Amino acid sequence: MAESVFRRFSQQITLIGAVVLFVLPLLGIPPTTYLTLTLAGLAMGMLLFLVASGVSIIFGLMDVLNFAHGSLFAWGAYVGFTVFSLLMPWVEADSLALNLAVFLVAMVTAMITVALLGILLERVIVRRVYGNHLFQILITFGATIVLVELIRVFWGPNDEVMRVPLTFRGNWDILDVIVYRYRVICIIIGLLVYGGLLLILKKTKLGTIVRAGVEDRDMVQAMGHNIYLLFTGVFAVGAALAALGGLAMSLFSLQVYPDMGGTYLLFAFIVVIIGGLGSVTGSLVGALIVGLTYNYVAYLVPWAAAGVNILIMIIILLIRPTGLFPAGE
Image: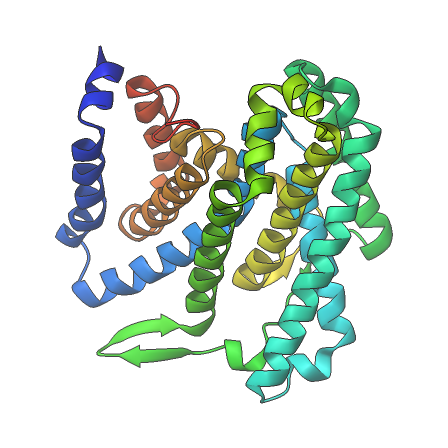
């Protein structure tokens, strides 16, 4: 009954929920602080979207539950950390061009490295358990343990400080609203990734083939397409998005540590459950809900910040078990 009502009035309910999410915190937060928290929540939401979108497309297009996604996230952060360490003069240079260059080099290196690692995982272990969710969970959880231990072997067990490029630091004071520079960059990156994913999945032949392979693998193979090669590519893209999320989040939190993937993987699963597994738009909406809610509640009731998103997830599951924007709708 509740789900049928949501289907009939989904746009109206979503709109009302969005208005409540944005306006209700104003009752307890001064306007300038509210705007600062909103920008912080949008930035955090975009970073969570980078992680959650990889989880979502791997499940939505491949029907694979990948619990190794968090460790791939951590690998992306550490590869970026290594690039920054090697090019520290560029990081500390008072030059936007050099800072952008080192960030792009770190981003490309992290994404390529972790994408290759994702290809190895898919070919060696994941391909053997297609269609069996229980085995997927067990085998990817085992891969997580191995990957995290490899981080400790290569980079050591201790936390490391992540240095933000010089021109990315600091903030602008606009009418008493504090706008942090790096948070604006995070929002831009998230929007670009969202637009790119939609463009590829909805407007290209490759996206059509991949989506068709989800519905009927045998038919796609009969038409001459190597569906397993396509699925390897999808897994590599998901791994690359995890790496991008790891690099961006490490700059946001100013640290890297071996187990960092576990924390953000939990947030990623909350996001995709709220938004709907397999939906890129759902991942974006879910990530923004989690990011904004966390920041508002952390300011008003700090002890409830972590639990409020789980509460939101439970409420949405009770109303709509498939999430706000399930794939195919």
